[in-house]
Image (cartoon, rainbow, N blue to C red; front, side):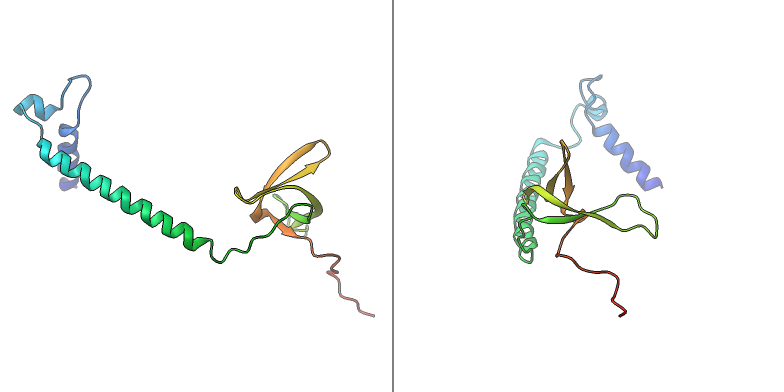
Length: 138
């Protein structure tokens, strides 16, 4: 706890205050806690860290879409996941016809009467024709 308090006090005293026009350390000792050369080193390290982060983000985006299978939902029949349902209610409603597919943003637009509603891909299931849930016992 004492170490954390020391760190907090050190950071607070080195932070620029607009009311004072300087940091408390600058007022007390006449100089900044960090010399300008050290600040430039920190800025260089931050730039390098941002470059590494951007490079890693590009690698991630390339690898994440390798297994994704493109599927066009336009003019397809889909089921929509119900938001609130009890244990015995069906999980999905539908089928509904897709008005517009937006793969860049991972959602589809479905027209209900005069209104257009957007649903994310995770809340829809493709309609695969007439599949019977109840088995024929005859």
